[in-house]
Image 1 (cartoon, one colour):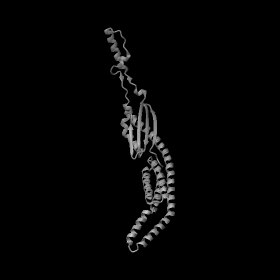
Image 2 (tube, one colour):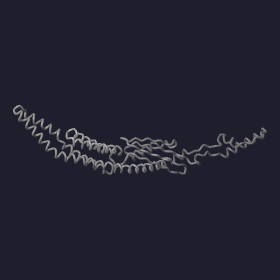
Image 3 (cartoon, helix red, strand yellow):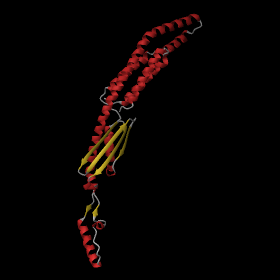
Image 4 (spheres, helix red, strand yellow):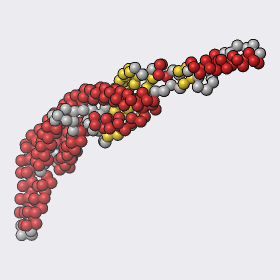
Length: 294
């Protein structure tokens, strides 16, 4: 099963003290990179959230943003009625004593020390914030994984299609090589026989055998074809694994590319060279998709 490293999720949940909204996004990255941006009231929980994300994803550049909107009853300042009444009585007595006719304004009293108590949600956040935030983040992670799974299915289809096309090219090269190899070998033997006849007595037979062996190795692509089929088989089995193995696929792809490049450097036949070019184009398409696999 393939997992894409590209995805997005947004989840919100309401609690009796407010709403937590989590937004997550991920793109492809060689390693695991996590960036967190939490509301200041929840910033103390960053280490726990970071660890929660690390356990859920192996690779990718992941960004998480958390917004917090506190309920009005939590944000609203509380009026201390006893202190307010005490201020009012004192001011009323002073007004009579000083013979002030101006009425006492309530908004003026609210500015006096102790009348308004600042909203206190710190203890509430400490008690419920971590578990609540963890729940919402877990929902966002689940949603993101689902999207990455869906994207992974599309990657699997595209990679499998191009892999089948590449295997077809390998079969064509193999078939063409089987037919052309005998002709090339026969022509090579004729030229070699003529060379020996023309220089009979002047040739170092041991040296000649060594050079012929080197030339034969440089000319034959049988080993590259065999290794290419082996890599293809391993690539398919890796694709079918229960876990997403993007790094293994990338390594196998490099090996497959190395083999077909070697074929291209060994052969001189124009038709075979064109097949090699086609094969490399399919491998490049696969490589572009594998870069997004976790």
